[in-house]
Image 1 (cartoon, one colour):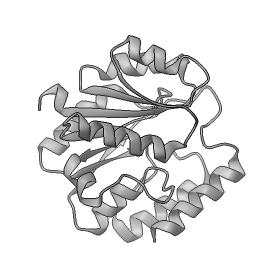
Image 2 (tube, one colour):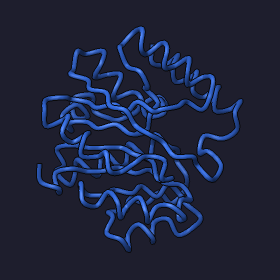
Image 3 (cartoon, helix red, strand yellow):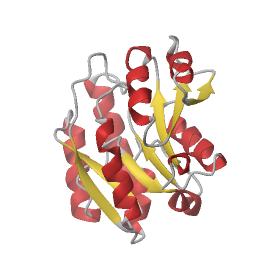
Image 4 (cartoon, helix red, strand yellow):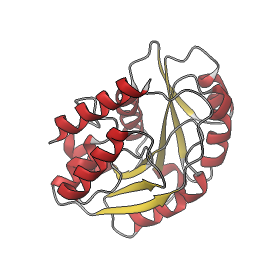
Length: 211
């Protein structure tokens, strides 16, 4: 598929230290769509200078709202595939071609399966998702979608699902789901979702809301 038909949505909050590396490495695969979610540093400027299409939130609206904005922008650009990945450099951009190939081969949604989880609640969510929907790692931030799945549901997220609602919608409705291994690198700064207790609580809420 032509590069301009693939939107790579990258939600970013104060990621000036890594966003340049991420944008530079995804450019060969599609159009980087960086959603600057109220950053107080030069995240948006750094991304724009390297050729990303930048969507700006004047104030922080949260991870899922950033993804909503990114998908809306990808639809406006006429993208047929949309891939999500993190701005902190944890995801290896060289495996993007595998996600694209899986969509080319007929998958509706491609879900990354990380080599590790970070929190107890992630293990719980993954166990439930595997039992109910056959999804091994619903919280992996690296996923790929056909845009028609997004159009069918009408949004990416409606309940603070931590990036899981659209993928779970596809699984619940019998869409073709592919899963690919994703190696992750250590994050050097604080996690976006906050301290352990609040992050676990948020993840468990997203699981409860998805059932």
